[in-house]
Length: 261
Image (tube, rainbow, N blue to C red; front, side):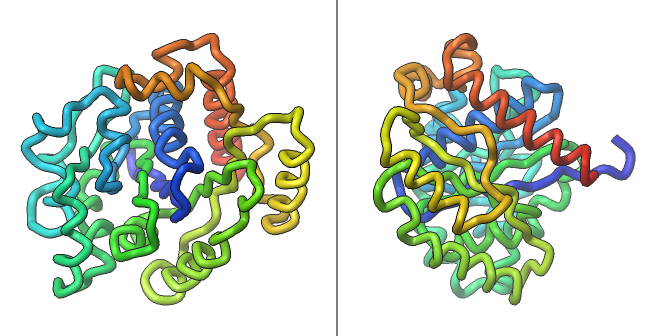
């Protein structure tokens, strides 16, 4: 890999239920499937990204909690999944306490960034699944990231809360990470038959000109079933619409990389 270090993408939206974890897991898995060695970092205390790639949280010796509050080495936390080129830094329930414990630590917003420096040369991509809040853990993820990818559900209140998220990104840009950029906005739970969906798409494109991915993620039974089997959707049912959509999205991300790389 030479001098190359991983590109770090934080998947964030403080609004729950927008397909954030589903997107983080499936983007990471599709990158791996495309021969990119990928690390998925789960910093959501719910730990759904960890179980979504088939890892039992209870069996993990260390979690991202240790990454944030102790001097545990990043290498010691990484677990290989059974999927191609896909590794995970698992989360656990104790992560909920990390938010309070980091407050008094030195460089509290930089802890994740500093902790993952040592593994960045080992991967092509690092995908961070952020918690659905704008606290210190999300700030750590945004400080460590090169870009932020924002999933938005195609529903009535889609843009609600987004200005807070963008304010947080601006604050991070000002204080801890001047280089962070918007990777793109991803429309999830898309149903083209609904007028409302079209209205939301128009509104989101107005809010984020030139930053909305052309790939949209449809609603789908297989997509919502896959996590309970601990599988990304391309391994659960490669022929379903959701699998095609995430593969298309990753091609879009990789293509953009080649253009600007």
